[in-house]
Structure formats: structure tokens, C-alpha cells
Image (cartoon, rainbow, N blue to C red; front, side, top):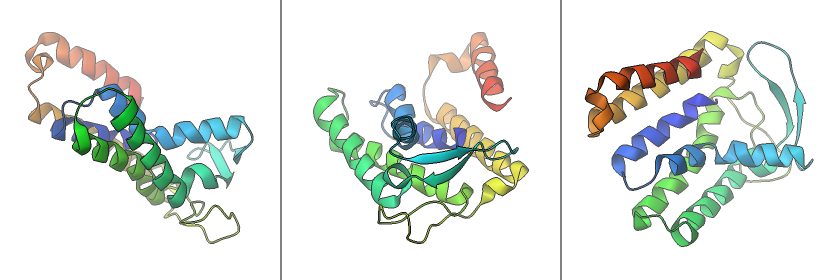
Length: 181
């Protein structure tokens, strides 16, 4: 899952508007950002695939994509937000940031093949994943549905000044078009 992760950011922005949207968008991708760095520095291993639905075959990603790793990363992100970011929202915002980071693993569980570990960094232990990525159509329908429904939920429940302007639909329509196509 890639752009489907962003649905959580739109929901949380409605629940706690004091958290900047850039923080929310980075929180939902924090695990993939750490994963990319771990691959660059040869801490985790992937194999690039050229089939239609999956761009990489996960060989070993215990530090970014295990449930234990995701839990640690959610705590790191929460601590950063609460004590170092200087941004508002207090304990509620901190908890929401933690939940956004952790939600990444549960969303990946739905789409990944069996390559996600639970509470271990030991790559020889059983791995989990429901494999929705095996179906390009179903995985894209899920991701598109998540993003569009959360985005429209955000629009419906906020008082954005852009909502009523002529430029709003041009701006966001082109953004959504670029994301999905």
C-alpha cells in the first residue's frame, strides 16, 4: 500500500486540526521512509521486481516492517512530536501521531504477501500478509477508496476556505489526478 496510507492523515486532521498536515503525511509514511534508508544503508534487503503489482520483493525488512519495529518507530515519532517538534496538540496529538505510524503496519498486512514479522527481528520466524497486492484491480480499488473517502470526509468536516472557491476543485482535482494516474 502506498497512497492508501494517507487516508489516516486526513481523518486525524479533522480530529486534531492543530497538527500540521505535513507532519501527518510524514507520520503515515514514516515506516516506508525508514525502510528506504535501511535499504540504502544495507540494513534491510529487497529485490527489485518488474511485475505489474509489486515493485519489490521483500527479503529481509525486520526493523521497519515488523510489528515490533513499527511499535518502536511509533514511539520514536510520538516522542519527537511531543518533546522536540515544538508543535501543539499535547498528549492527544502525540497519541494520534503514534497511531498513524503504527497504522502503516496494519494497512500493509492487508496488501503485502507473507513478508511481515510480528514481535521479533528474527527473519526466520513466521511472516504474515494477506496478499491483496496479488490483485492489481482490488488493491487499487482499496487504496483509491480509502484516499477518496478520507479526503471527502476531511472536506465535509473542515472549514477550509478553499472549499467554496473556483480554484479549489481545479487545485485538488489535478492533485488527485496526479496521485491516481
